Image (cartoon, rainbow, N blue to C red; front, side):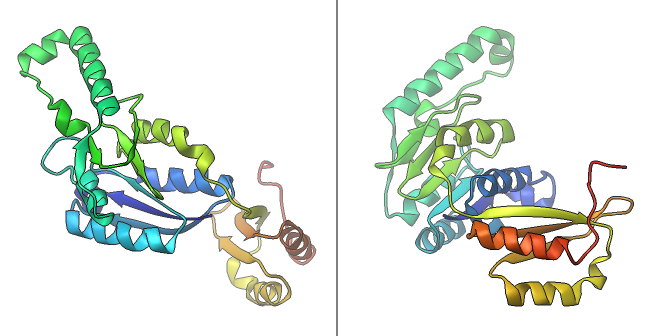
Length: 247
């Protein structure tokens, strides 16, 4: 299964917010055997988001977006995803009911904040999703996400995103397998070995240097378990490897 990750927000591009969502999702997807084909950060630009989602839903089996949900002026993701599929946005009854319940609970728990700041939320704006989409209710926060064909729209707040991904996690899978080796050998000394590895086996081998005294990491992946195992054993016989848990 090939997946594209689109993380949305001006704050990501300015460096004000660290993009932990992309790395977390990539680990979750890779661990399930899916192949993450693209990771892209874009601003809160409706046209650009729509264009990217439209293109990626044709290229990949699934597209996951994070960020830009809610009822404020810069929350344009729902409108953009709707435009990518030539849909309108409409209030979803289940999402609206959930928003109202969440706000009622918040008012009961924090009445002083609601009164002090005259806190008001437009439930219709919060609960509007593309027509025909399946809502993903927000178990941690306020704004719902949704699923529209092969597009999965999740919040940008990390704990909300992770909880909502749990609702659809079983959708994602694949046959990609991975083996990892650790070595003290410098990356520059393994060039010829990696060249021969790729000539012999239909796998992808990535080398990831670490700051000493930690060992370097080699990740071998592919869609054929037998080939990945054979390539790992072949490489293990030709370079020095170590146990990363040992000092």
